[in-house]
Length: 129
Image (tube, rainbow, N blue to C red; front, side):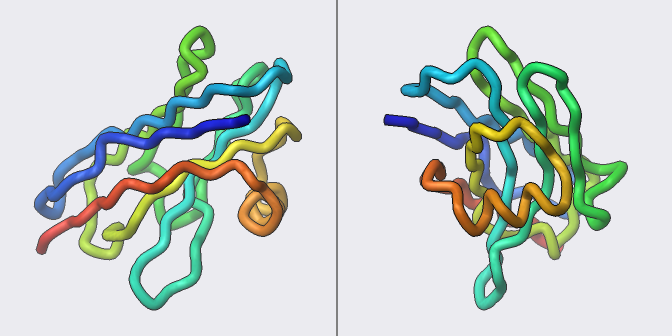
């Protein structure tokens, strides 16, 4: 059974930084993509960033480009989301999700969001103004 555990959320002032972690376990396939998503109160869950394990290709939604960086530690099957220059509009619960199809793009993020059964429990990020 695939398990994803997020950590690293918290309260930070605008302009600050946080690093989220997503530790994946319980799977047997060699390649995959892990996407970061977020959901603010009253809003739909949106894709934020993604990284594919073996080729390291990444995807970012426009609102976080230049501020967020996704990276991975293949040996630990852990993906990180470094979030800099945080804004109050970044406040949300952040989730990671794993998909066996190792492609990161706007379209693949929509597929992961709609169909992936592999999600973490979420971690709260709050950015104060």
